[in-house]
Length: 197
Image (cartoon, rainbow, N blue to C red; front, side, top):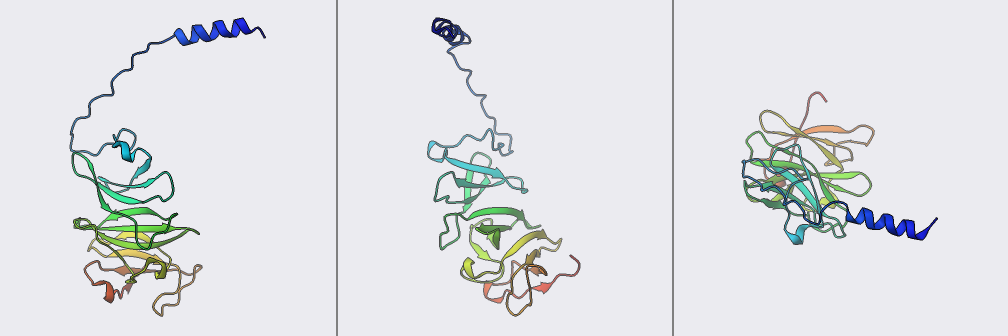
């Protein structure tokens, strides 16, 4: 190879194009949340990864570095607002997973996912952001491994439980699906077994 040829090619390539950059298009308030790709984040949040949920106007986010500080956020019409942060006690590798909204729009059903493909299911009040375990425990580490399946038309949460819980004989190979009512206090989380799936 000839070095002068390479140097000449570099000068030619560097001269192509322009040094001016097109300004990003101005965003209009359409009443719709921006997509994750075009959402403009404040500089302090640039090292965060966010993804849309199946619920329009909500997303889950986490820091790219440890600790991840996961959040569930809601689009207010002009910006993203944190609804709730990580469950306590902290777990550096935990994150928010699937999120669904109750038929009356007052409660989120969310999965708190943690290592070893495990998750606890949580009710989150949309207005206050107060999270509570669907199964009634105070500490998410004591909750049974479970997955959120969604909502019934009358506002009950469908939750599949994979480990023994409150005297119910459950195994990972034979999970059971229960209905939980978000209106029932945490200390009285006694579900009805779901018929069907």
